[in-house]
Image 1: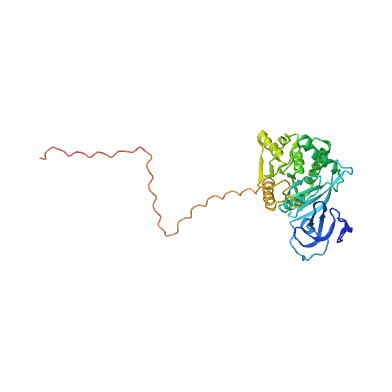
Image 2 (image 1 turned 90 degrees about the vertical axis):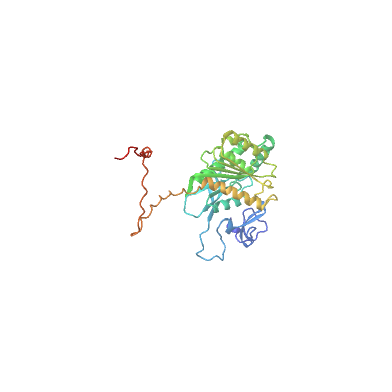
Length: 353
């Protein structure tokens, strides 16, 4: 946020402006970030976990679950050689698994914000690349993604424009793995819709990933791209989604061909983009059910439960109390062959003298 945007009631609010208003989540009037493209306002205290205005919170409050920062990471696909993003870091002083969010050309949408906050609260370090702030030509990429689905039957992951975007996400993942207090061996990617297709393209090239979570992705071209994914994959979609039927068949075919670890979750009645709070397809119950499945999948593959401690040997029986008569042990059975009893001797028939 710019300093001149603080605490100002601007008539023409820009995307990302910081003003004082009513948060669309908590309903309180405080510092908020305006997301004009999504018609959504999110309070700084909830998203950034920091505030630059006076607050009624007293000193000595518990440490927030996570903190967030705007970062710049190196990349070879922009003119400046850098790109921007938002990092959410759990405050717990342990090595964190990492999750890269792959946004669509719309940038940091409400779905990306929702996912980032949920994942950070669960203990993951999150990076959301900001395509708009990175001066990336999103208009040409937008056309390439949509026209490829219409003309080729899927997102053309081999086209130059899409390749540049996938390379940017690969550079973002390398930066995320290099951060302090992260475990680079436990990394995952998550995306929705066209962003999920880009996440699948990245997972097909990065063999160091631990998991891939996809929410209602669009089909990709070539259609057998999922055959190259060697890590567990979660596929979430709604039963009323008409846009991802072809992508569903592609992932099912990849499971049959590779015998890999694929999980499929269908949310009854949900439509495309049912995770987006600012779109008509948003469904609270369906979204919460899907988020719980996604978090459980990432936790299982990136934060496994600690190993069980070894079982204690059984304690010996306590000795008998003093003065208590001990019961004699039963005689042991003979191991030799059984002997038949002797027959009785017959009485003598000789008369006595």
